[in-house]
Length: 304
Image 1 (cartoon, one colour):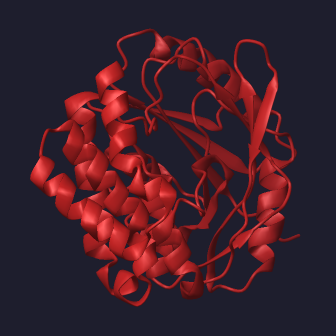
Image 2 (image 1 turned 60 degrees about the vertical axis):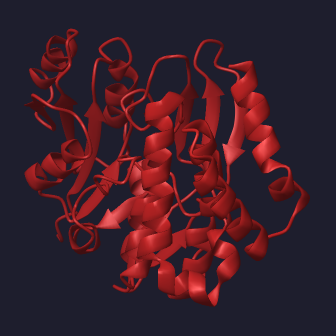
């Protein structure tokens, strides 16, 4: 009988002792059982290690790694410790549906080797009430032909919904892209995979529950204050630089990044740079939203 392939599930965490139970238990309920769950703790100061230890004593599938730092390197260390042919992810406060691994493996293993990864829709819930909020849909699939759309917006994203072939994830660095402002960007990760020639396939059924609550996430994309504006500058400048060849052919794909630079520079009081990027924005996309965008940011700044 052919041995079933090993799936590595990587969870990065920090100070989420009260929430990580949900993540671990949902993985333990999977219908596909040949997996390893690697939890990488980025210097937690709470009792995360004790909480996870209670599970590792009873469940040999769980591996716990403690680091004295946090960041994109957490995911890389998890990947280096992994042994699976397939790599997937779950945030420390979210849940897989019981057939998550089974369904994702069934799809990815059925595709030819040019398909490096898959992704799908994600259902969002209020963490306090359990109320269903909305579904983040997955619409795009293919290879380099969808790269302009991936550069233009975060249309291929949602790390908890993704599954990579090991060779594909390794080829893009085995981690999030560090030093680009948002160091946990699934958007940047998926776009890099497409740019390197990997194809992506979407599936239609949500296999994960994402919970929204007031506690901070490692993967939180929210931009706040001066430091947040500096990170936004890095992030959008990264896209404009790395995907310059794509943008030259598809100028409108730069709009969201010029808009981001306008907002960041306004917050940093770099009005000259904000003006330059505002002109660039209108050259590629003169919409009402873009025309009034600086005013929108200034009103927000006034209210803060």
